[in-house]
Amino acid sequence: MTAPYDLAGVGIGPFNLSLAALCDGVPGMRALFLDAKPAFSWHPGLLVDGTVLQVPFLADLVTMADPTSPWSYLNYLRRHDRMFPFFFSERFHIPRREYDHYCRWVAERLPSCRFDAEVTALEWDGAAGAFALTYRSAAGAVSRAHARRVVLGVGTAPVVPEPLRPLLGGAHAGRVLHSADYRAHRAALAAAPDVTVVGAGQSGAEVVLDLLRHQDGRGLGGPYVRWLARTPAFAPMEYSKLGLEHFTPDYVRYFRHLPEAVRDRLVREQWQLYKGVSGQTLGDIHDELYERTIGGAEPRAALHPGVEVVAASERDGGYALTCRHREQGTAFEVRTSAVVLATGYAAARPAFLEPLAELVDWDGRGRYQVNGDYRVALDPRVPGELYVQNAETHTHGVGAPDLTLGAWRAATILNAAAGRAVVPVPARAAWTTFGAPEPAPPAEPALTGSEARSEGGAR
Image 1 (tube, one colour):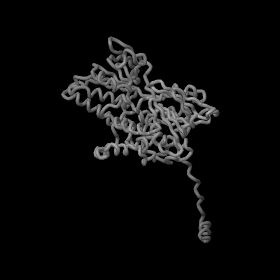
Image 2 (cartoon, one colour):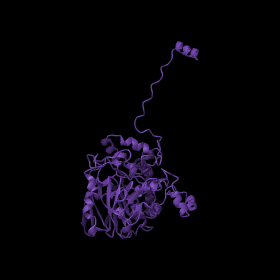
Image 3 (tube, one colour):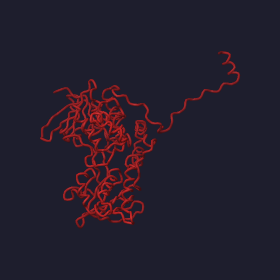
Image 4 (cartoon, helix red, strand yellow):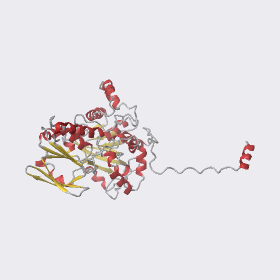
């Protein structure tokens, strides 16, 4: 058996790719990253022209941890002779398609990244003193590798509301779908008479905007567009400078030490920090609707916040959605020819983890217990180290899925795995003090007049 890798990553999305980039060239760090896909891709179903990242370009794979890295977005621009065009474009938020291309450029050049390698089992090999990873190619070739430390970066899975699950796939494919598959069915949806989008986040807003833009200038061609959302409003994402400090290491450290019940409540309440819509996209939707009403015309669109779908069925070649207005408590029915579910994503336990599952110390709700270095609590019989990326919202807060913290988290994991500060991380990054301030030191007692004179004489 060859010597175990020092670090292995399962999944090559932006977060594990960030770790691979920071690992590159580190002395004494042999790393391997595996992904089932044939090549890097990032939310391909939502790479629609005109969409941009919701974070500044500095939140690339490395810059927020190591701006000198050759794998920065600015170096990518330089290598593609795009530095001057980028400078003159005055972009802070870059096209989503270019971010995807940038990540592919990095992934194709890092020797530690291996695609067409689906991990089918992860287990602890006591004899080897390392984790054993079994993986196979699309052609069926099976391989095995060992690593002392493993980082799970398998991403999240699309969430589908229970009432709509029976309508997903099969004969309904292309007519009832998650927004993750929108681009593949975009042309057919644009030709449909009526499309209902469910979900109030950025993905839902982008699908609504794209469908509205398929209507002609008079609002006659293209689909009738309906937007349903459980949230009480189509609300903008929190984007104030102090509000964004929730996406700093300072807030992560504060959040991690709160009681579990408080953490779970905060994640629900803070939806506008990470599930809101960019103000630009909301403005663009409003502008499209404004254009449709010139001359007194009625827009072929309807926006319904505060609504949840409680039942769904196929009817007359289309679909009937039974809806409930959450504040009024009233029910109504929507008839539509297609449904796009922009209902988000959630972390799920990967099937390949089953051989190791009984050695993981799960919390009461079956979630990873994660420490400050993103290390998962394991049975004491396992001396190896298991880490997670983007599966720790319940322990580290709403910044877990955000690209802003990606490079910092990868650097934190790398430093923990190496046992030294390979990439220094900031001690403080926010002006806000989260939690109660530290107690002030006791004040010196005031001197009496005679004591003051005595002090003066002594000097």
